[in-house]
Picture 1 (cartoon, helix red, strand yellow):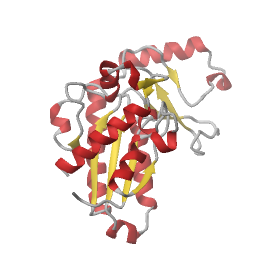
Picture 2 (tube, one colour; picture 1 turned 120 degrees about the vertical axis):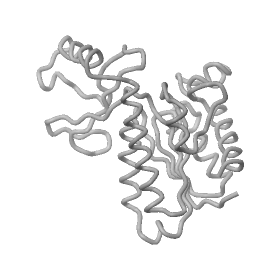
Picture 3 (cartoon, rainbow, N blue to C red; picture 1 turned 30 degrees about the vertical axis):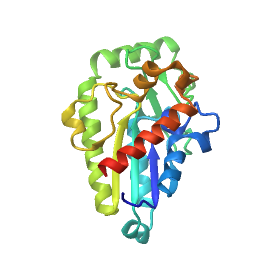
Picture 4 (cartoon, rainbow, N blue to C red; picture 1 turned 60 degrees about the horizontal axis):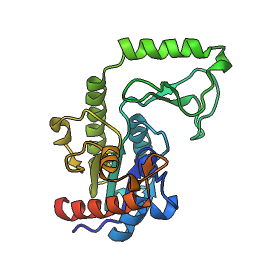
Length: 240
């Protein structure tokens, strides 16, 4: 099995470890890095979108030194978030949770309810009422959002990210799996090292079906992360 120096994980709250008894020690990225005897780097963020996964991974790679890129073996693992989460940029100076101006996460669930802005974006600051914001979300979902096209464009960007990783880190590998992302066809998956959950499409589906004892506050708990680390380790041994 290939020896890795670093394990870089990115995603939303599922990969960040929300739901674990101790986030820093119990999440699958730490358990897997221990199994691989390498350094864990987890740049996930609760509520993060696939836009953010791609954007922050580019930023992370660009921040690395030339010596690191040429000599280190790096395994990237991304847990894809809900397809309807999007990065949006607003036109007034307010910092988001990453300390950057104007970027917020526009989140609505797959079943097209629970619509709204994450990251505590207060639309009333611009004199936009709750009624007007709900009207905007309804119009957006009805006329400007298509799940299959959004999936296609997300995977197009992931394909380019994979090429970028190989160009900048010759000894880099990438694994994808779905935490919450539905509607992914086999043609999209075949371009990547894709970790499956058996007959289940997402990690969320898997833990809901397997046992309620694997959940905590609606997220994978410590036991679920332990199982995930074991299954991913076996996948790496067999497939990479």
